[in-house]
Image (cartoon, rainbow, N blue to C red; front, side, top):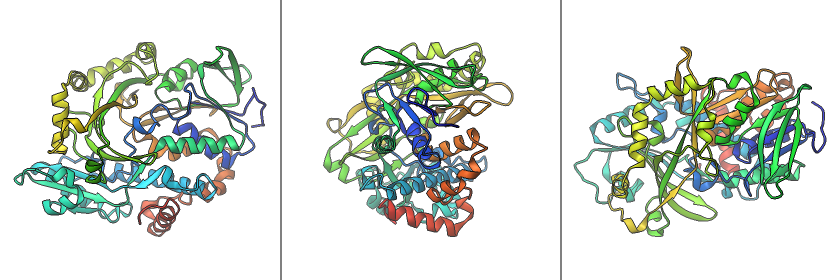
Length: 494
């Protein structure tokens, strides 16, 4: 790849969120001479899903998220997915630590802070599940230090706000990890892109990408409109990444790459109840995840989160799912219908038929009264009072719909990296735990899109991410070194 000019860059990144920011940072390490341009339709970066109030800020490491530790038919718990997600988060921690040492910020606390991660359940079935979950995770090196308790007195010291006025007859159980974090992905995105701009990356705000297409010479032509002036121009790059959150699907469809055929998207909006009452916040210095209701989708797992945003502490409870056909908060009501094509119609219909319970759930959520919404909070916080909480709207999430091996449409909860056959174009679809695993996702992109360069880049990547090419869960000594280093550099609790 040769260096291009201002309208002929090596790389174009669509979207000013955590994915594009992470890829820009990685390219700055392995290919600092490449020219890069970033196009963001908003007036600032990180205004969609990466925005701090548009997500729960959980450094998703599977320390507390129960949907990552499913129970088997015999009641035992499968730890595999949790271990994999934790492994990916450690990759992010290493990369962030490297960037902090290189001068990303004087204080990592501007984007990451230690916050205990707690799983909390009630009832006899919940108690049994939690015990089995603890027994499955505790022996795993990545979950060292995980604590278990079903003693109400001890839990009162862990989560006093949740235990106040709770029935003594109700069985309770919880696990706690002090290795948990709260991450302000908005602040992190801004730091990464500010750093990229200082290196020469061109960031264009209020520039909406209208379409992308492959030219006969192999370059990708990206047509953008300057929203301030209305002028259009076309930028031609050797490599194109579409990291536009929910907006990625229609752009990849318009690109016409065969790899996007069969993929669809199902948008889900989210709402949270938020309190800034300092007395309540002081009683809940943790992130606590519970269990989804029977029949509810994984995205509905209730959680009560401590958030630390720009020096302010607050609590978020939710999510309350809703439906909007928009693929972005700032999107169009026509986003969903326009995304239905001949190539994904079967997938969309199949996923719709297979997920009728999800449809019913979303309808119920949309029609939910304020009283029933607050009742869900009271299950977590028995002493909750209406005047302390306000309803806020979080970001749009577009869940991936894809074909399974039998050709049926299925709804996938997670992220999906789409890469063109020749590696000159890629895009990311899906949602949680996306932001927390952005570094792993973008490393996979480098491996798949630049297989002829990855060997030469290996020393640079391993300098930034010591575990790259290794599996921390299988190398306890390397894990211990990595954890000690990132804990110290990111100023986290040991």
